[in-house]
Length: 112
Image (cartoon, rainbow, N blue to C red; front, side, top):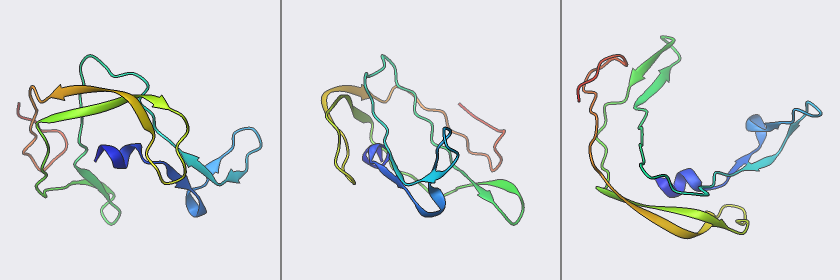
């Protein structure tokens, strides 16, 4: 999941970048880099999708699997080539400490 998040994304077709200087739509590559690891890491999984027919959010009820630890890369090394994940020179190890579970079917309920 982390590699997918850090992978460069082509902005093209209906998803072109809007240039604020000239107002045109341009093809581009969007990247996300982690320059420095935090002391504490909080991850949020958004388990809702928009239902166009009803005009509301709907909860995704499929099971997910996740690791109890995460090695978070940081400190960017050079520029990635298209379709590659950035290379990093450092990483920070995180262990799962706690989690919050929302078993309800609506967005506003929660149980810890």
